[in-house]
Image 1 (cartoon, helix red, strand yellow):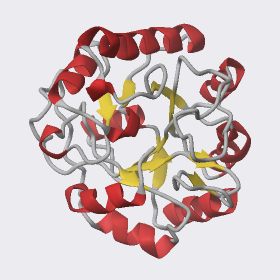
Image 2 (tube, rainbow, N blue to C red):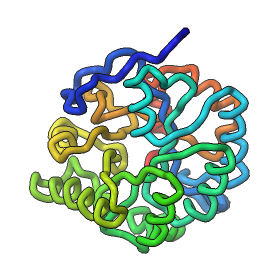
Image 3 (cartoon, rainbow, N blue to C red):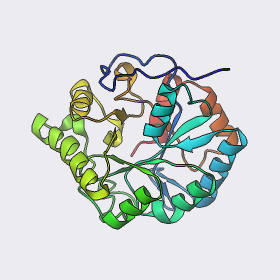
Length: 260
């Protein structure tokens, strides 16, 4: 019987050292809502998400949060599991995404901004204002079995910050989310997908088990996992193509499709 190769047992694996075996397949979503005004390509409609989740199940696959995915792979039980992530913590997650995930027996990781609870996506000046999850919404997602991870405090490019500011974004956000949910925060997601070695090292030192990037290149590892961008144009046949191509070969295309 085929089993996926496990991740390194140590959560302190050095960034920049490739993981043992193949990378897990991790999909990157953002907002689930009306797509009529979406200049940054961060939104999928509920209808499209339903189609995509239905496709997963038709292929014998099930979406789970990243921590669950990594734990399963360590046990040699990762076959048939794919990671689902939702960046930025948009308020529409609870209303539009959560019911569909539960219907199809899936879970996901929601990466929230601890410093913008109940705010909006002010970092996207050219697009519509999208409300972000409130503290109550985050608790509701966690109570429904979703993993809550950190996206930092304010959605800033961590590679452009000084050491003290970067540490605050990474460490304070983790502490605030843990206090809010009453659980341990295992994962960090890099805003804009921007990483460099000091930033990845800071995430590892802060105690996160893993980090999610987009196209991490030579820094790829358990604290800089590559992910697959999923958008409104991704019909089932496009998802099948993305699933079949290794993450490293998708990097240029993912950047072209947009990362927020």
